[in-house]
Image (cartoon, rainbow, N blue to C red; front, side, top):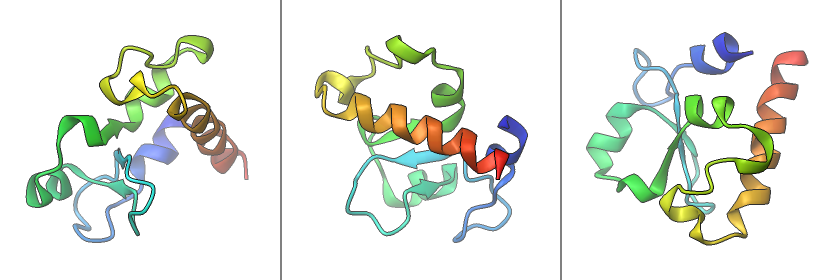
Length: 90
């Protein structure tokens, strides 16, 4: 699963892996690369590395991550993890 999810390329920077999630729900493209973060000057509180999401264990999924002080994000991130897993299965 990890290889498939992490092998997708950024739509703006085709040579970079799309290994970061931009946490702004209104964003057109939420899967971004490191170059997007640099160009758009995103703050660390606005992004989440997909590797961290994949490696997180179910009930304690990144609870100490700064934006997750808002507990409404936990179920959304858990669903995103499930969606990432099901994408590989399809």
